[in-house]
Length: 229
Image (cartoon, rainbow, N blue to C red; front, side, top):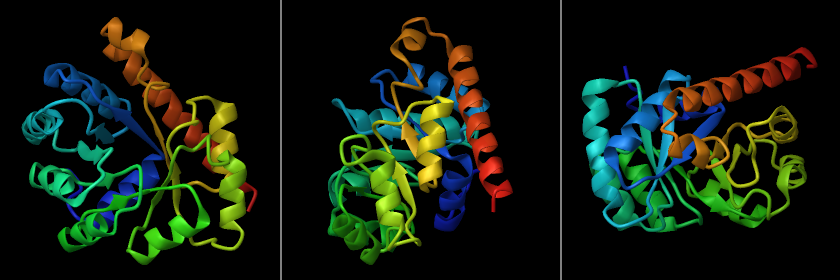
């Protein structure tokens, strides 16, 4: 059964640890990729708002998974304003992600009980997002604003912060260990996880296996961190 309320979605995102980030104008291909991610264990998937008629593709996907696999939790990414967020929420988005902080968008999501993760690149922006009620902030672009060292610097004076970087995170043990060791709660990975080669080959099983392998790495890293406490 799909997570319906805000807190359940937030828990699902943090427990999953990695959010596949994906867009393609072909709804049928998107459905197969998202199903592969779900079969690999990643039920929460971010569909990015890019390209013409992206919202229509999202609606087709939401309708598809409502029947085919209701455990899938679809979110909308690259959302920069409240009107766009309203469209995606009305089409079934369970969470919203954006590249920047938008107060009007945050208020809309709060009103509708939808998690909103805005892109932040400084401690001030993170604080502003938290003041607007954002439980998880997106560090974006992760590699350009300081990477794991930035996360450590923020977590020292603001240990309650939940950070989810996108950009600069790779599905490798070295990269994941560095980021999760710094204190992130989850990360978004796009083309490094759902690669062009896999897409060109329509290798959905390969996507599934890559997602499963990444989730397993995160599970092992977290287990090691818990043992050290």
